[in-house]
Length: 68
Image (cartoon, rainbow, N blue to C red; front, side, top):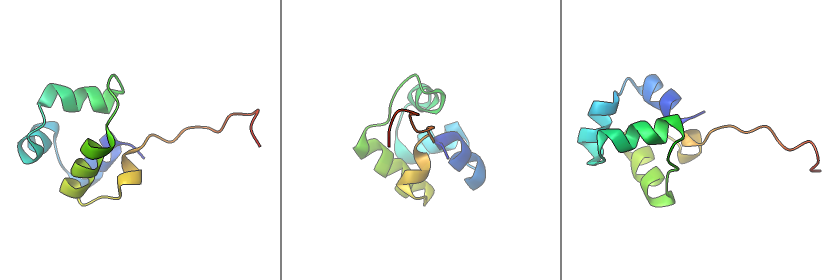
């Protein structure tokens, strides 16, 4: 999943999440688009605010074909 998907699932806008967390709206947009990476502390705070599993905020990545 991703931050965008969790927000959509929970019906929370970027503006509302900004109000709830105190994180600047532009910064949240950067997290959503991948221009900026979530720190562990910020990710946990957002997950708690959204009542979501922190792992759901992470983008799913395809495993490298060269790894076992």
